[in-house]
Image 1 (cartoon, helix red, strand yellow):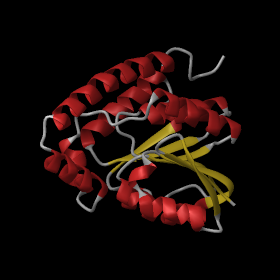
Image 2 (cartoon, one colour):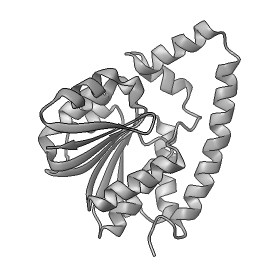
Image 3 (tube, helix red, strand yellow):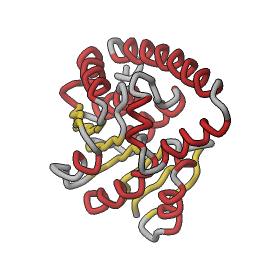
Image 4 (cartoon, one colour):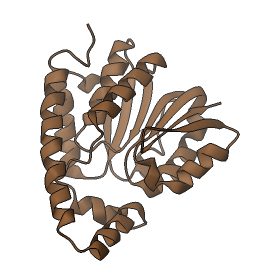
Length: 221
């Protein structure tokens, strides 16, 4: 038996994935109705310096990982025996639940996640409680540059980057002195973070590979 496929966490996840599917369908329908120039402007906003405006506009929408990506996170965390996990981009907590399930099944630890949209923070915390993993998860509210810039564990085992793409590189740099040999980093939608991908692929401190169509998987050397 494992936490990921066992009630109550599995039940909460199924509900959230269903809500996410509906939310993303509505979002894509809305975006698809816009002129191409407006669509391009929104995407530039999402990956640029004005990312907060984009995410504030989308605060009621799920922008979550896929089911396959969730399973991948669980697999990697279990294989790496991760007990200290950092997540950038909580949203409503789908990815957080996968990480917490792995940490629990690894014998316990802590997932530190961060989200700047208050409504999402509130709902994500409720979801953690309903899934029975609230004691394993700390959701910090605010800008990740600030919330992940203090009070972190000495040795980070696993990092998930799944927020504003323009922050992937600076957040990675900020966390580097807390990593150890073997720390795994997963960057979702990394195809929108070229500066980050360039860095982890050329740096002597990492081995990195594109995984699936939009994930960058890296290991700290």
